[in-house]
Amino acid sequence: MNESDIKILQHYLKAEGLYAGDNDGKRGSKTDAAVSAALEARRAELPEGWQAWESKRRAIACLQLFCHEHDIDAGTIDGFYGPQTRSASERLRLLTRTGSLPRGFGDIIPVRANPHGFPLETHEALVDYFGEPCEARTVKVTCPWELRLDWDLNSTTRAIAIHEKLEESLTRILESAYALYGPDGIKAFGLDRYGGSFNCRKKRGSLSAWSTHAWGIAIDWYPSRNLLQWNSTRASLAHPDLDPWWELWEREGWLSLGRSEDRDWMHVQAAKR
Image (cartoon, rainbow, N blue to C red):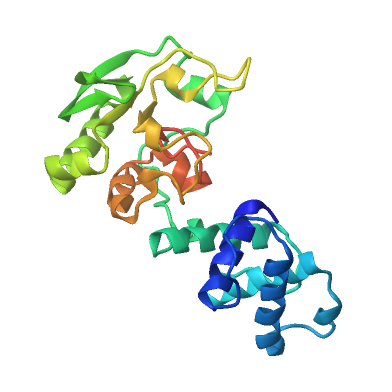
């Protein structure tokens, strides 16, 4: 149980008039006394023997109860701080801060299509379908809207360098996206914030494996708001209003790492996993 957990616990204890101290993230005697009062009022929801639990375990149980009361599943009310309780506490803090909860990753259902027979993301399959990395025959696809480099917003382009085998597919996707969202929607969702496409480089953290960017078959969108390890609770491109954007790609056989693995929401590629 960390400081943030204790702060949100204190927040809800204070809302019930049980705690009058500061929300300082420190579990002192005032917090423990308030926890005891809150648990006593909910004794019917607690397992037998809960009165004998040490104060830390009682505080965790109280946090679990507050999560459940806000329709956030923290698992069994047992006073143990496992991964489910930790995740539930994070969601309770988000709910308290924003007034609503994002949908869970399990509620996101990608379109499973592969009309062009894109290969699996293995070196052999990629070479067989697209050729050697860094030697791709790329073409410039014109984007219907102006793209701003995400790391230098004063630099703009409309040209996306992509493998020649993807020219028609990418053109269809971009034209459909522009028709769907229009210039205002494109800007509002940051779809004009471009992170690049063809790039002769290895995968991040690898000395040997080539990135799909090295074949010119991947594009990054809005990197600054969709960092590599951010999941759907933080990444801007996970917004439900962008489901149609991703479905345009998926119907053409492209793969969103965000929608398939809940990470690297900036990245879309013409290779399967």
